[in-house]
Length: 361
Image (cartoon, rainbow, N blue to C red; front, side):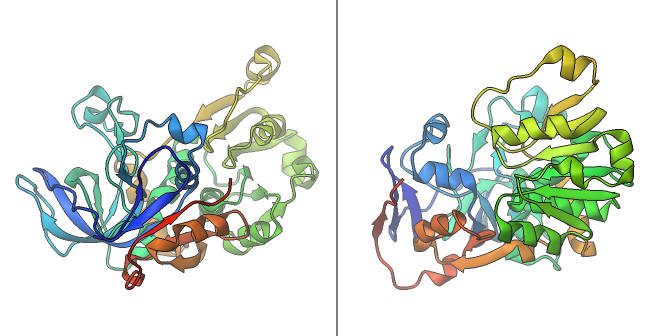
């Protein structure tokens, strides 16, 4: 079958047409990939960065993890799913047996495998996943938007974990990538009093203002506190902040800009150590600094899909480009500019045979 394969630790990937079909085992389903979206982790893997190598990839591996499609085959001892069902996939594959998996916290599984890293992923015509990792789609959600439920779920999970009622709150977000844009929409949908998004890219700032009702986009050179409304000024900071860019300086800014006893959620994957004055920050200011990783099964997915169905969160508008699988390098190049979410559609790969690609780092 057609697939994008990471063969070894060298920079680049290979588009092939003869990738063997993954073996279908008990409790698994085979999905015909309808749409699969590209994320920053895919860029790290493509470029064989230190962060990617630390993931411990299983070579050769089919890349990609954000995916939606139609079940084309059901393995033995699989219950509740059947051929023809449209599904999106939770890409953090828990073992199903540990303490976390048995207590509805499978995103913390200590034996977790990752789609497109430990097992063959979604940049292919078909992918095999555990049946328990499938989210059955409502008819109203198309496959392109459904492929974004996984990254958008990271935003939803952060909201559910923050512990701050967003209605009437002032919300500060750093990073107007897909996760930050979904967070802005969720905050608006929950009637946040004020939503401010920090983003250096002007096109992405404008996109944040377009997608979220009443959202204000600010350049990173602007002090967010200068744009706080009267209530935010009286409280000397925002009620809650979400760091989605993965930039260490942004996390420092958010800690400075939340009010006493405010909450900072670390969502973007940050490289490096975060210096923290414990007494002056956590103790005397009473701040809550909390991390958020993955998605809760299935509370995150249910809540997010409800917002999508109601029209208050628009995932389709996050998509700016649609490309065939073999143009993954072009997709990664677009992501360095003004692109929003780039979706790969296997149905567009009709004539290309084999191609090795390596962009300059």
